[in-house]
Length: 81
Image (cartoon, rainbow, N blue to C red):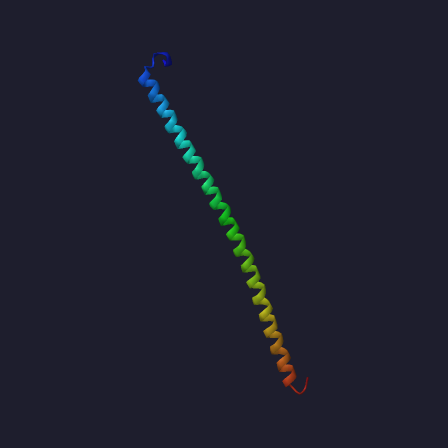
């Protein structure tokens, strides 16, 4: 079958192969771009988790400090303590 291809047919095959190569290159470029976006998103997610953890610790520390200050404040104002 390949032996019967005309010059025009060979050019068509070459064009088709070039088009396929272009499509493959574009698909690979999109895949790399997607991977880069996924890495960036994972990095941002990690930063958000760290910030949430930090804020939670800060909130817990403040709540403990307030409840501790309230208890010591009541104790110091109570003459029996």
